[in-house]
Image 1 (cartoon, one colour):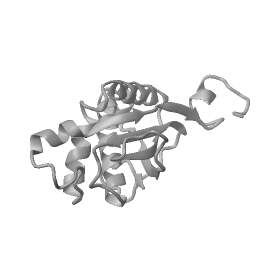
Image 2 (cartoon, rainbow, N blue to C red; image 1 turned 90 degrees about the horizontal axis):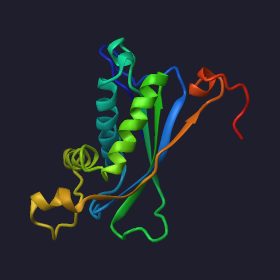
Image 3 (tube, helix red, strand yellow; image 1 turned 60 degrees about the vertical axis):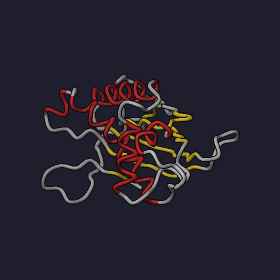
Length: 177
């Protein structure tokens, strides 16, 4: 699933020109009633909320640069993961090196907070909009639902394509192995 950066007048997602990539895994517990493409879309939308917040602070976004493209796929559960959790692999492609640094900082900050500031509330809302229930039907109190959803693992890694991403800007001329 790809959630592209949207701009006015563009009907299709556009791929950023640069190739700075922020990737990792996100595992959310408390999702026993959620699965499928709608859940991947909800994760992408929640990650987009984190990315857009970082983009607001970027000079590049004020010049019209788009904050990036978010891709989310479902991953197999890790050993020892909570039974009611879903694991996703994500990639955030960013065209501007400065924006890439801001996006990484925002994602790392949100991960350090366990996703409680933006990711989990947006994920919960998106699940509801897409007809998915984050919890089993036994749970009755809606106020407790957002508290039951929790990030059980979140990894953040960076990568660049040689000659295109921030490594090229730093003068790296070799290849990644």
